Length: 627
Image (cartoon, rainbow, N blue to C red; front, top):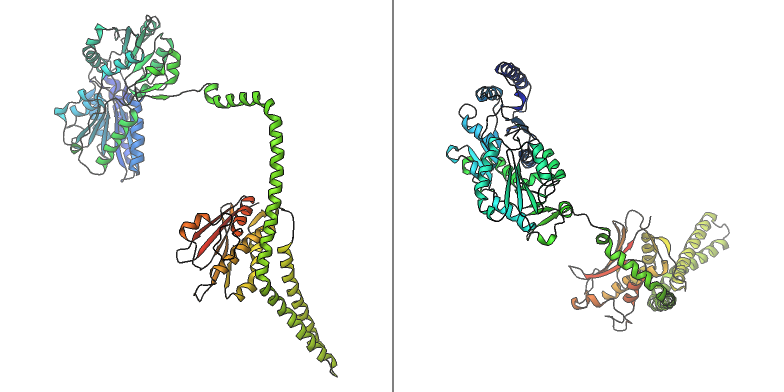
């Protein structure tokens, strides 16, 4: 991931001094023109310095992830500037001219932060810091700790390094493939890659007593492909780097790795997660995401004013092992060989794995269908008959409860009917007296007749409500408006409330609340809750005996609440009040709330009870709305 070579910006890849001088002049001119344009003075300028170029693995992945993380975390405008270093290749040293180019390019508008990706870029900056950016903060990242020149670090430098562990990477190969006898190491020929070749030979020397190591560092990539295609059985390939092969050919992105994986007769492993996803089997590797997040965190701290030299980040080791399930299948590697804590990616389930229980269940159903079909039909008929009988009995029991309630309402209903009847009688007597006069007042008689008709309708409405309540009708679902249903029920109980010195306070939703239900049974539930509230407040000493009835819309449900100011429900009995035969009344049957819950559940609704914070009980009903 690091190294020291001679570099040049990708833009200026020229083979002679004359061409370079002309290109430099053009670059300086373009730079001055770009600087003359209006720019946001508050934007942070970050120079992303690439070691080989923007498409060379693994640094390209780290650069993209770091850029993305900084943009996400900084959340302000950031101007990213890219410069790439490559081998000059013509035997001359272009660095002095490149230093002049960078100095001229960023002289008028300095940069706020340098992110040097890889040791070649970091080494270049360090060697020319006094000429280029003597005080500009810099983060060295995607660099192995052994390649950091600590003695050259300044107070404006900080390092986010990694720690290679080649023995661990090779131990992973031998664990996953315990029969391995040969491991071929693919490595390039650039100075950076030659440095790591020496390090790997030193670290892996003890391993040569167990397996054969083949080093592909002096071959062109075409020859490497040929060698990899004829490796002996029980072989593996370790991909280190292939930026420049022995023939001097550069290899960008993952093209070379993918070609190697396609033609090789052995699985390919690596040490860096940037190579994972197409050709690599897997194992413990450096995580692009983790290192990029750490780098972005350090960069943001520096942009916020923290001194780079005060930020110390320990080198990142290999992350937990990850494996490509597709490569495991390709090479016949068992999951049981993977180290503990491994994560599998790209797993494709077979048809049996994806639908195993469905297939087994379907087969079982088909085999058992002939034996059980008659029993199921018989059980279904019995269930339907039992449901019909249960519903009939529930309807009868509900009707008994309504008659019981009607008995309680008799006195108040008689009083409510007597009022319009008395008014009719008084108006009739008045009309008779007017008619017996010598000059009857026709207009007065018309008003009297209108009053008689209005009082007659009032009496008829009271009788209609009572007949509706006591009617024996089958369970029938119809479209209803909960607001209208509440209004009718409250009207039926208004006289009882007056007689019991209670006030019925009703607040209905501004919009209609359409539900699907049986009008009589739902009215019985509402009536039962209101009468229970009136009874609960009968023995209280409160001056304000108020029953609050409210309707509202809650998402896809119509909601009705009935609340009183009585003594409430004993806390230990809250969960039992809907059970059959539970009652708090001296002469109660204990069936009203049980029937109410059964009716609401038959309407696919829910009924709940709780004690109010300031005294009294509250019942809440939720019924599904219809469109």
